[in-house]
Structure formats: structure tokens, C-alpha cells
Length: 474
Image (cartoon, rainbow, N blue to C red; front, side):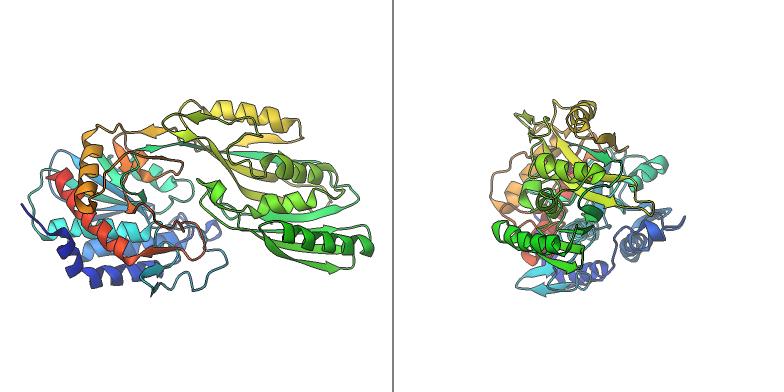
């Protein structure tokens, strides 16, 4: 059957854009301060999930909402189920936007909004691909289920809950990465370096904060401190402006008697590619480490400045490793927190380090090595509960082979396998991959200010998804 998939997409272009723009207007950042039994990740993710599921109800699909954790949109019959996995939650917008991050703007062929490329735009492309297959009445031998999540950017508690209630699809893909295909993903574990003890020193650190999520490179960092006298404050001010001039950062410093406040700006990026960003947390620590802080504050700053700073591949931490197929281990220091409590002693002050590791590395081995290195600097190491093991689907698997063939037919470009440090819902299935929606050579703005997806790529991806769903499910 010869189908002009792009023509079918073009006929639905206006409807697709309206649905996407309405979805992008929902601020679906996770907000634990507002979570309830009915909104497990706060009102934003819940609203976006329900909004997406409502499209399925409108369009006549079978729809199920699993307690506002996740849900699905389904059609077709058969013994096997093709799964498509998207997510409605987004990372915090942060600062530095030229437009309102939750009022989508189409400018110069680009759709600017938080979630436009990660992952509402790609999800909408996959949904419309599914809708085209159903609208055309094409004969299928399998079920097609679009699973919609709401906690992908945090702990994946949505999928944990969903699969306690629902069976897993047999195979599938997530439209949350790049073409031609992502059939391998590194392991993912976050370790915390914790610093305790008093804060007695010539300089006293009152507060230090950087980062929004462990899977984002901190774009901003702030610190407040007490210095010995006004002369020291003025000397710190001069040193700061010299530091900014000599490094790829900007910032401001405010002096009030002996209290000094600093705001430093770097560049945010996805935590899977820490080398693409400028970590405001480590650069701020690098500046402050030259001054005479003491106790836990000194240890906190010194570790950040001398070991973690620009240690993208874990070399200074002593955990560097490279696998021939999966590539290098990477480390992103995504969260920094140091705050003096009322008694003058420190609460739990920490640096969260997110590791993306290839086969040949274990989470246990990472923790032992990092603890051995940072333990000598006064830090204690903990790990989070979520440890994602490295994931790989062979290139000769029929799922991978079919998806690569679809890509080649639509683009004329040779398809090939790829392995990334990012984690997608594709790894939820033993035979699961990530597939688009970004094309080779795209500008990666995921997790950054002024995130965008080009309109042409959105429409091209929709045609590819429609064809892929049909070939996989027929």
C-alpha cells in the first residue's frame, strides 16, 4: 500500500499545532510542595497528563488514566502490543528566556517553549502519527498503545506505579531523543557528597546554592558570606570582577559592610552532556576556594573547586572509564546546597553528582571509588534509590532494523545505531529504544533557556512515526 505520509501530516498541520500549543501552555514542572494524593507530582504534571489523555478521548481512542501518575491512549487488536512512550512533565524553565517559556511562539520556523523538544513536541508528533494510522483504517495485527508519563524528568515514579497496574507492551519506542535511533543508553546513578561540621573560619559561608535538577548543568549559582572587614569585602569584590573577566561566566557581587552576596551565571545544559554547559556551581566554588573559609564550608568549596570542577569524565574522581561501544562515563554535578542553620552549625550540605556509565562499570564500584576519593576530603557518600543499568537492543533486532529502514526511506540518509548518556522511557522495555524526534545536526536546547523545536522537524518526525507505527503493527 503506497501512502504519502507527509501529505497526511500536512493535511492535519493546523490541528497538530493547535493541540501542541495548548499543551505547551501548561506549566508541568514537578512541584512537591503542592503534591496531593490526586496530584502525585503537583498540579502541573497532572494537568498536562489529563490534557493529553483528553485528546485521545476526543479522537475516539480507548483511554485510561492510572490515578494521575500516567495513562495510555490505545487502539487495535492483537496478541502483541506496540508501546510508544512520551512524557508531559518538563524540567524547570529557569531564567534567561527571550520569551515566556509557557506561551509558545513560532518564530523563524522554530517553536519556542519549555517542552517543545523535550518532550511535548515529539509526543504530539508520535500521537498524530498514531492518529493518522487509525484514521486511514489501515489493517493491523497488533495493539498500539501510547503511554503518557508525568515524572520522566525526576524519579520515574510514574512508570513504577503505572506498571504495578498495567502490563508492559511487548516492544516499542520513545520519541524523546534523536534519529536515526538510540538503541543503547548508559547506566544512570546519582551520588551525593555530604559535608558536616562547624563553619568557623576567617570567612563564614552563610549560604551556597546552585542547580535546579541533578540532570541539568547548573546555569546559575548564588552565595552569601561574612568577611573579616570592609577592606576584605572590597578586595573580594575586585577579585570577583577579575575572575569573571578571565572565565566564561558573568555575574554580580553586592557588598554591604562585611556581608557579601554573589550571583554567578554560567550555561545550563542536559546533564547527560555536562561538557556542553558551564557549571555555575563549580565556577563559583572555584572563585571562593581562594579565601579562608573553615570546617565544612572549606571542605565543600574545595571539593567542588579542585575535584568536581570540569571533571566531566570522572578523571579526578578516579572513575574514568570508556567502553568501545557505549563510550565514556560522564559526571554532572547538578545540585549544590550549603546553608547555615540557626545554631551556626551545618545541616545536610551536599553536592549531587549524576553519573552516566557504560557497560563495564557498576553503581557499587562507582560508590566505593568516589567514597575513597572524597572521604579523604571530609565528605560522606550516599546514593539515590534509582539506579538504571546500561541498556542495549542489538542492531539486528527486527524492531531496530524496521525503524532504521523507515528513517532511511524518509530521509535518504543511511541509518545507524547510537548509544547515549541520556535516559529515556525506551529502556522500560527489554526490546525498547528511543527514536527521534530530533534529526542529525539539530541544535540541542533541551533543558536550556529558549528551548525550541523546528516546525519542519516536527512535521517530518510525524510522518516517520506514522509510517513506523504502521510497519511495526501491521
